[in-house]
Length: 316
Length: 166
Image 1 (cartoon, rainbow over the protein chains, first blue to last red):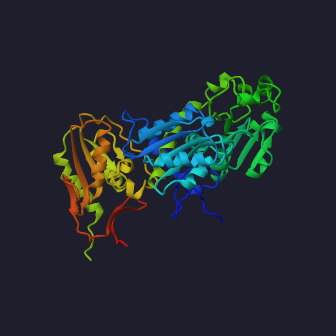
Image 2: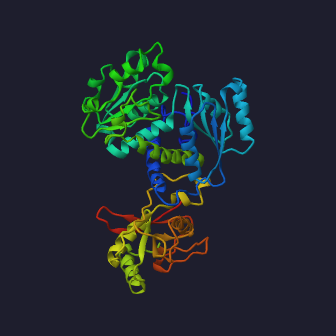
Image 3: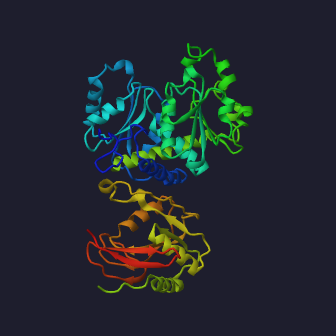
């Protein structure tokens, strides 16, 4: 069997590329470590000296303000120096130039590369080429994975629900194009969630998704029944009037989360969304801003989770 | 090998030592893990008015570059204003002084205390930094490379143990 590219010889996390393939103990280590970092972010001095003198390079080959900003905040709160590089994909020629870019940055004494790329697998390619003391964190690659988003979702669920082993979690919407959904589903099943449901139209659910251990529902009302956690996914604009969907209005009618549909879930259910939200497309404003919503705490927890990931990989 | 002193007796001795010298309004912070156990007991024995603070110095350690982050760090909780206060830091075993150095650095990210004193159950010598304890249960000599550890039984009783190094 091939060696896990994310772990070092001692089985410790060296790069974070995907939740898929991470042992349960490593997942729990990240969640456990994020907890005290959440404490740091509540202090007046929101900074610890752990990564002092280290350089974190944010390599964004695909635009993303939110994810880049949360990584930047996390790195700064660890006292690292942060260099943001927004590398437009159009200016990149393929193949060799990606590794050339990284080799050049490596020559500038990088310690951690945070990589966002439109091509699935790009962070793996970079991880294969970095020096032993350099670390790669995947900040979203194509449709493949977005592990820190998945981890912050897991952290949020644990924060509100404590025990994974008695939960019913529904992931709703466009799972086909979502790298968030895959990361989250892998994490949920690894941590022992007994029932994970995928809710969406046939056209937006990946073929063979049942193999990941999820129950598929095309009827949202049936799928939401007795759920503890409802994760809404963003419907990307370019899909709204494409061949997979009739219209945004039609999607909202069938798969938009309204207070009326949410009432079918458990009374203490939490509602999550990775952002950015399309109000009135996948989620109604009254739900997004309502008492079940933990969408803004997710953002706050995301910083603590990224601090945990960076400080674990940079120390291994 | 010499028998180790009884940790429960040291705890009583330490409390008796601190009591007459305690500045009114002092607040206490215990350092995870062993120091937190000692601090819980001392805090009750001394009847301090301020709630107990607990600190994990994992994010301030000086060996991160060599050893990485330790497993399962705990959240530091300081439920009182640090600025302007007389503080008593509590740890189980004082050795190199590096944990206390880290604790002082973390502490100052919460504010500027009026004073900080250190109380330890046991001092095993071997300091690598200019740090000393104002209150100490006992000086215990332990062979180089061995570890002096505090244990807590299910019933809460504390005991000292020497673990041989590799």
